Length: 156
Image (cartoon, rainbow, N blue to C red; front, side):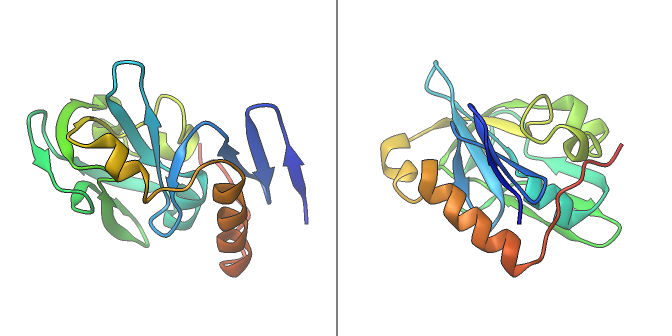
């Protein structure tokens, strides 16, 4: 099994796991805390691989208030449809129009320009406690990858 530790991310079975993000491994959603105290969310490399080529995305509009765990978006591929749960309670302050128009972009660049939404959290400190980061996130992600026998690939 191939495991590689790079400077800014881990790579395991072709799956990229950035070190600076928070994760909900069960739902395969990542969260980045921005300098302005907003948070940006997206689907992990493992999540996009398991979903397959994404065909449809419905993202909550700017101004929507979302409870933690409720969908900030719904994604659909040819073999899967499901929610992207909000990892924090907050208000949507930005929506990635590029992903809304072409969700397949998530399959190409899940951690970069293919983020899904940015929220202004109501209680960030409280909500971050439920998420994994660092080595712990990597170990849990590895378990998930092994359990589902995943080899990550980017669809182009």
